[in-house]
Image 1 (spheres, rainbow, N blue to C red):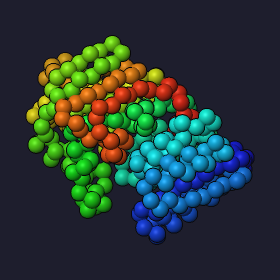
Image 2 (image 1 turned 45 degrees about the horizontal axis):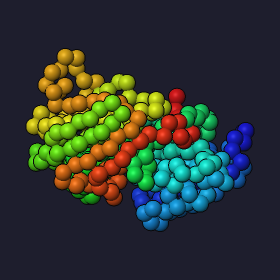
Image 3 (image 1 turned 90 degrees about the horizontal axis):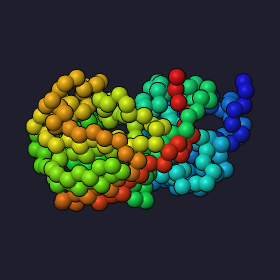
Image 4 (image 1 turned 60 degrees about the horizontal axis):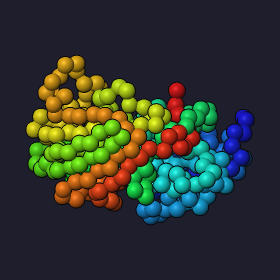
Length: 299
């Protein structure tokens, strides 16, 4: 077999239990190791460690592979995005939803995903930046952040990705609108909303956002403003492959535009969900870094 990478870092988190982790490693490491001359395997033990490892090891590596969910991928990009010399990034889906790996057409089966990564097809992709942090998939306030906060951990373990939709629907019933001001490249918007999403990817909770022109390498962020939860906001946003034509009610409830940068202010101050992780608040200054990271993609 041809060696494709000289130095590679493989990061995994033993969150699923020792037996499941050992099974996952046994499935993927043989496939990866035959294509890498020097493979470094590190298990993380605490939140934020993936970011630290990527920042410390990244410039010495040709490839970084993370085995984990969207939170692990989020940590990885926050460790790699500021490096002068950025390695190729590959994702092995090991979380509940694995939204960004779906966007990249990575198989959700680990063995097939490992084979896909070692086929070596890469693409330069955009990275979103907000204040001093980075995101690959989305930035959001309102319903999306509340839904993430309200997920029952026990329910998530049993129901997996369905728990996100159940939490979203439950949250939508009690959603309170907030005031927002958005200043973008060609837009100045002010009003009331229940959710604002700034998308770089196209999946949330394994469901596609229903706008077919969303791309991850066009140098643009897709901004979606949902004004009213009584129309079933999450049903429109998360359960349709594409919005039906001439749907005036949907068009009145949602506003969508593209921009390379924007600022968002809200009243009151709101928690922010980035790639499923909640650790910051509004206001926020967002921009896109065009074709900033080289990632392995599927067919």
